[in-house]
Image 1 (cartoon, rainbow, N blue to C red):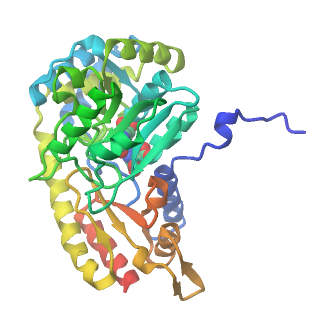
Image 2: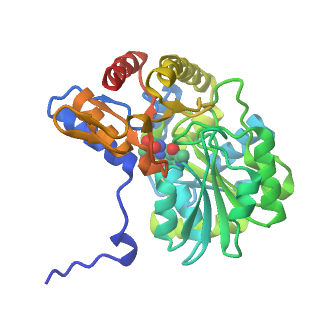
Image 3: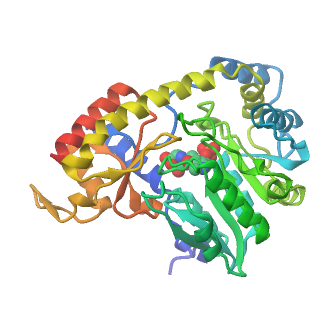
Length: 401
Ligand code: PMP
Ligand code: GLU
């Protein structure tokens, strides 16, 4: 008999579907296949030079030791300064916790607030790790389906209807991964009013806050007044805005009691996030911000190019989608292709089949919407060069044809 028995929580835990799709594409590439890879949502730019230099300076200055588990005071202060500068919002450093990437921040929030039987409201489509992290805590994800027609935004009425006495938290992602949707300010405020009225906490994942395409306007969830701020836990970080995915720095801003509990948890689980990365993040936030806008402009060009190429697909192939107002994803419905038989006996009955067939026949890697609670959809990350996008969209088009 095997001595190995996994904990009940881990027995059903699947690997992150985005990371798994990226690994599959990489594996094919290593076998010599020229895969056009649009799986992973991470900026293709190298971290700005001033930030890289700050990291080298931090190492040379001997910042190579443990730091306080919840982050260095300079970085907490830099986060506060950034929210004041960018949104006019005033936070104190004791409302900030620095963690190992925004994914870790989300884990900390859920692990600190939710236990067995608690319900967490998640508008679907949602980012893969949301439901997994909720289930890991023994809590129950309550999915609220949104539609393309509503721009994948949950209405206040849908929110109210999902609330039960067991509801602990709403998890909101604005702008959204995987849809790129952004909440209209009035609709966001309506959700905030419900949270106040029902006295609920909201985890607002704003990791794509700097990747916004006009005329879209971004509003921080905590900006709707003190009674909303008192119920908001903001999650964000440097990964997307400063092209720093590998450095693993995210943060949480929220009520002091929650931050304290998360700091306790972090001190037992991981200790501090990488000391060098923290100093680099201080420079990212305090230093010149031009590179953020320069990268955003590049993402906007790519977004516009992808949309121009995809718009004719509606009439030609019955593909539907809502145009992204933020982030770097195109999310489209390919169910018009279902029920088709391809040469070689390949059948396409769902979005996962579509992705498998597209990878095999067209050597293009996308992520299935099944992973995001959105059957029928697929996700393309356009955080990659225009050249690669052109080749990929050509290949998808000839596959669709
Ligand atoms: N939230 C969302 C919606 C994301 O797309 C990501 C990126 N994977 C994260 C959180 C996590 O970001 P990080 O890389 O900082 O952990
Ligand atoms: N946010 C990225 C994505 O969704 C990174 C992958 C991950 O962390 O799961 O592709």
